[in-house]
Amino acid sequence: MRNILIGAISGNYSSTNLKNWINTSRFDDVERVLFYYNPEGTEIGDYCNENNVELITPSFDLFGREVETFLANSGHLTVENSPLLIHHVRFLHWWYYIKDLNPDDMVLLTDVNDIIFTDNPFKWLRNKNFKGIVASSEEVTHEQELWNLENYWTTFGIITEFHKNTKVYNAGTISGTAQEVANLCRDIYLLSINKPRNADQAAYNYLIQNSYKDKTLFTDLSDKWGLHLHVINQKKVSFDLNNIKDYIIIHQYDRLGDEIFNYYTIPQ
Image (cartoon, rainbow, N blue to C red; front, top):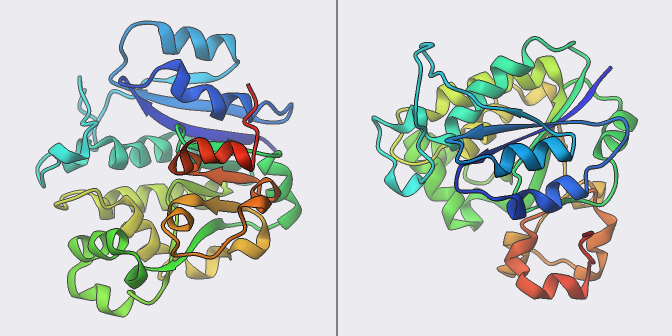
């Protein structure tokens, strides 16, 4: 069974944006794949090749039509172009890739620019022996964090009233067995498109609380799995930063700026 770490980047990234994700994920039993949108030049390709990272350049939309440019800036999002927003369409392409894997292969889908691994995430996942989705909590409810509440409302309208008190689970760290993750990616994409703002996190949270609820392992800070520093930096979650290194995935470390170096030394 394979362990596959998957991310997505766009042409405005440089090797600097990939460095920490790549340097902290060098594990013998982990394959690494990056989906690269709107490629520019050869720097990213060369860097990935040097570091044994497979690079995939998607070029199709939901209907199989060739696409030259995907939308990278969510500030330019409209209902009409939302199917081509990278935040959304990555889930379509991830589904297309993952659906042909062995159902018991383990996959981890993450953001790239603001993720650090302190240990092999697949060792933690395999030890759980859970065949389904593994979700990582931000430790706030939708109602407690305005961005998430507004994101949910613009995606699902009044249905938000029935979900505003549920915890937010981060769409930048989704993991689990290949068959379930593939299906989830497909459904996230289909629920995200034709919305007035990026909707992937709202779609993900809706799905894991409804049709995927019985297939989801919901983790929190006590599991020492994912640590999401944005809400901690906002003082919305109480957390001792001296414990950062105890978590497998450190997400949004850039929110702390240089303060992160007081608690964790990023490998070079």
